[in-house]
Length: 246
Image (cartoon, rainbow, N blue to C red; front, top):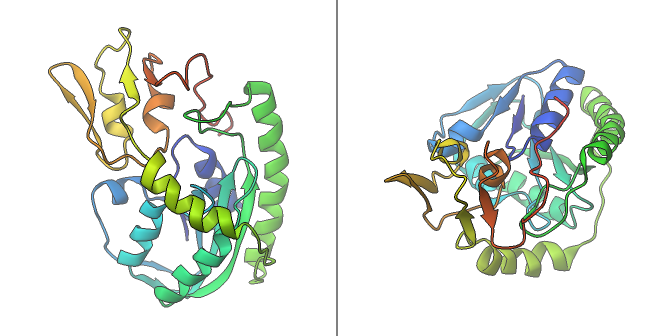
């Protein structure tokens, strides 16, 4: 079974392509994480966890979900992390997590997808994004063949500093929601409330409010139909990225 979490569609695209190649089910973890649903899951085929890379590691909300959910049946776990350029030393931490939950680690592989972290970086335009995704599709197929053949992903080491010290600093100092704000064009439709995996956004008296528990998945800002959410001045003028290929 392919388990995936996705903010703006990159990891969803990868997960669904893997599911097609290996003839397995892709399960979106969004609602389970949002509702604190940790009921056990079962798969006779290897587990494949697909998620974005947050500061060169698996997102903590995904890590915490896996710690609390019993995975029954097959004991092998592959990790596929989408990223803008690199996953650093994420494999080391994925391997440790796998041992902690009593499963067998089969490797952690990166898939470069269009950058979507508009709170910090520029994002490629539509044409460039489609090119990046097309290139990624070829690697997705190669990784899928590894999974079908029950072979581990090739181990890659590196990025220790980024995945350790910088990751901790990111969660301590960067993952804040105070800079999110709405523009006058906000029509209080509530879409941002519904796409937040941590229930961190509320609509009160026609005003959107963030409650201090943000994971910076960029779903609220990128999925706003009115493009009425900004992250301070960092996001001004940037294309709201949602994976253009389904």
